[in-house]
Length: 493
Image (cartoon, rainbow, N blue to C red; front, side):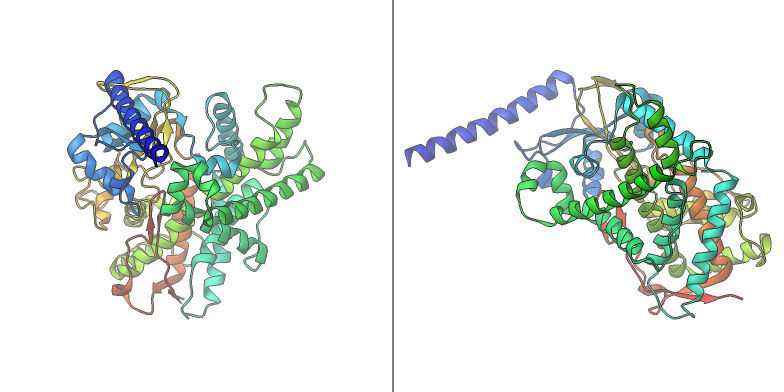
């Protein structure tokens, strides 16, 4: 009994010591203010585990737009509101280009690839990825034609439902995923390909796990979670299946590579890999190729397809908005040809609705965390090296001083008094600065062309009527995951 008692006392003293050290660190570095936390677990008990960004927004009312919280033992500075986020990510971009060592992503990518890299690796991979994707048409006419062609497959699939209720999840996921597959793998897949559908389900389940309390717990206590039983082990096993698929595609490319005629992103990376194979410090090697392709495949599939599914729910919830969009589309485009990006100039109301849908869905409310790679002076504070930085995009997209009705659907946010489209600088669903989403131009193009094409051909409804649609997310944490509904696509012609 004396031994166990002394152990408890020693453990208690250690916890108190750690807590005192954290207080000393806060004073030493002039950290931003924030709520008091507990040793080891920090502020975790105070966070809403199903929507932690809501708690962070509430904290900012007391501690201001730049504040310090502790996620477990991880020191974290949260940036709240457009001014703070822009000042950090754009005005002081070089100070905040670091990417946080997120355990879930490190485990999934084995520490390689574009998404979680820093320093020279990040610079080389980002420059190469942006240049290569643009060469293959991202944001240009070539990519527009791919999306237009894929939209025909989506329309045909929806017509095959013959106005009976169906779950649009897989149709939309297949469509969006095929676009990134064309860029990265140089091929599209059939909507009836069982293996393709299985991979899409794996991507969806991975995002859901990352947005669950269990997934967030893994990011805070990874070593403990590796030891404990739980769904994290099944999730990582399925991510390994994705890796095997990517590696198989890379091998197929190696076997058929023609360096005079690269077909896609993988071919271009393999060519660069061969060019630099004798450079000891090259970042163009197999591990970075596998993980970067995995980054592009996951990011290029789930967030855009979720946004389009959410768009359909919004249009069903607001049939008058849907009808007004159709009237504008009929006038500007008609029914004989596919929509093009050039049409956006003639569709200000439609464009405003699509921007408002992205603002409202708030797909990645806490962004992907940044990281200080050295001590940083920001406003009147000193943020020490190895601090996690959360740019709270949720607070930007819902900031009351910048949006007339931030918590409700309102296309007028993006229209001037004459009905013309107007930009809002606080529209940052893809983040901002040097670590903004590399696929932003592709995602914008997909959302516009796919949704306009669908409205050109169908009127959407659901069996329960507009009042049965709940626009609040099914899950909220890393991502806001929209609810699933069976919908009805009634052909217009």
